[in-house]
Length: 428
Image (cartoon, rainbow, N blue to C red; front, side, top):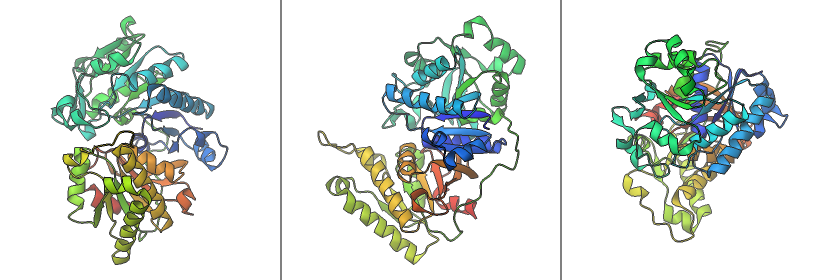
């Protein structure tokens, strides 16, 4: 029976957290939505054998009411599965708007658990995200001076986490500075127990892994914590070194990279991969005119690449430069971002039917669309590729693959420049 239940607001975030939990000794299953916990099938069996379950949702940018409903359904399913402690996982760049969805979901989870307070810990130093004086840094830049300032879905125009959160929540927003964290576990625990923090969401500074370990230890009695995956660094599971999954595919199985993210990090990864991998860019105008034919052309391209060299994964990508984001959407037409998600999801299902058993997906929204299209109910987390990125194995039968599929779901901002070419060696 699982010890910990987590709710992630997108699919890459779910595997990001699950990767950390596996490294900390938790046998971890990612459930794709809440249904996998309640259908009584093989997914439920896997969950029963896990130490931690992460429910992957696609709620980061949906309307607030929808995000809250989905998150509450996930909480109910996790409680029914036996979980007693909970973790609301959001992106380490605090991706949200002034309406939500981080604050409303945190409030709803606390109310449902009859709890009044929690911490807010977006720091993840291993990926360059740190919080100092409540200000969120992306490497050496303030959040609002980083490429996240111009994110197409959640533009981050302030780096102060408290100011970002305050309009989203009905609770007071407090802050605990780094000097209190550095005073140790007991000092931090006593501070959090003070009356002014008893009904609040409290932003806690952290600039290194030791800070996260201190925060995790000081909040061990909280039924709900909220944060990025970094906070899991301070948790300890019962199966240190034995929690990894094996690959589902043979070493010579065909693979592909499907990159829907527009982030600066993914654009750099695309530029690097273009020098090493066969590649094809999605044509937005063609997708508008005839999506089925455009997808079929992309799949034919990938299959031709496999015939030439089955060990060289083709790259299908949406964005190579900021100019590619300047799509004019005709009145009433589907936005380009949705066309891209659907096209790459359709490519994924067609490629699996054609024999692909290894897919590296870049972008949270794209990862959600692909995983859903493949009808994957659970993901077992395997070999880590980079901080926050790991290979995962679907259940047998997903996408019609008898032994399952190896998926790597990569947040747009994560991974080294060469990840599209080096990730495959982690499956050997």
